[in-house]
Length: 78
Image: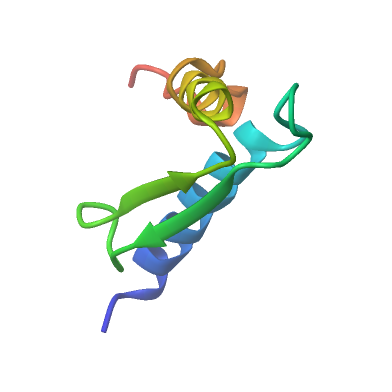
């Protein structure tokens, strides 16, 4: 069983990933991408994305890979 702080970090990661895709729809089919998370700890998590077509998949992957970091995600040097 994972410690509470690790579960919280996993949930934060999942929510952050979902937020990056919020509002995204296929320009051709008007469908949203579907996310599936596998794994319990941050080191184990994999993400599967499914969608209606390659165009949507490309848009979703770009958003996940290149979405700007929020201020809370940026770590300041000690």
